[in-house]
Length: 191
Length: 60
Image 1 (cartoon, helix red, strand yellow):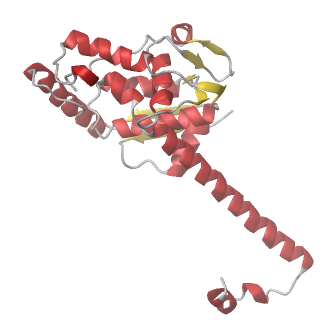
Image 2 (cartoon, one colour):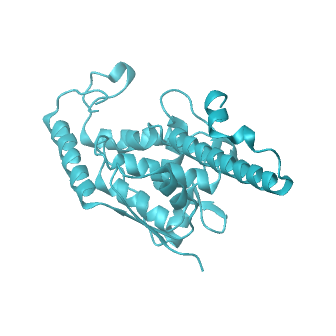
Image 3 (tube, rainbow over the protein chains, first blue to last red):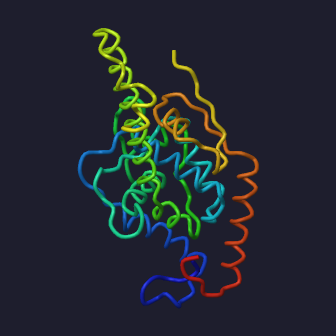
């Protein structure tokens, strides 16, 4: 947290160097490819990251959390390619999300238009997020995308199951079949 | 006209359904709970104290 990486792991970095390291962490890992994730996917991940930052365990600046909340409320979201993660957590996705926050990636808005992040932030009346030491790492290295995408998958599966149950019930109502397979006792021995 | 979805996040009480509502919404107001603000301020102070102390700390 106060040192460099790799060969510099025992070398203490100054506040200035750690701040630069935050930007370097984001810029060096914000490499995603493929079609952009949907707005729904990115917003879900931003909300998950915001929510987990609020536990305080990452030690980020309060301004980072406030910035994510403002972006969500202004309905702007980072453009992130659907393929990216290597290594720890959702590193590349998280870094791509953060690239827009610092005004160097791309944002999209409600209309779906993509713009350079700095331009979109200016349109929204916002300034790029200023990173302090540790902030870049906290924005890049986490599992918010995996959690958000899993939540979306479970949500869709649940909706699908509910639809199947409704369709089955309506079909049985229409054809008036023998309902004995749904008998509680029959279900208990052969669910 | 869509209805504004309001939520106060605290790091603990967000449910899957609420997450989906907020993620899909074009009109939401997300707030940060006061307790979370306090928690973030305190944890950031610990980070800054460690930075000021100058002790090598890796990946805390």
